[in-house]
Length: 106
Image 1 (tube, helix red, strand yellow):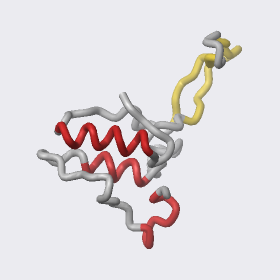
Image 2: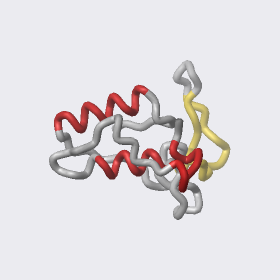
Image 3: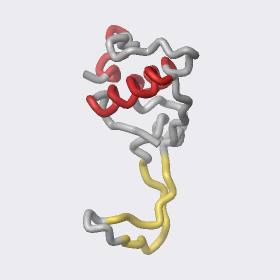
């Protein structure tokens, strides 16, 4: 399991590792919402909500409308890893900034 909120060093190094070794992977989650019964504090204590609720899934590939892509750069990077053998490199930035603007990341 791996994920990142920005296309930074962790993300690029993880994808480089997967690409260099042509490793199969699964990215979870797709959904934009998650069912939550509570949360963990920084000290590891679980606090239960009075009533379970649906919350934003920040690592989901889709937004809460289950249609819109949350981070275009993430989806494009993951798709580039699907070729076998993998041809992805960190220098191959698959995002068209003219079309997608800031959704491309940095």
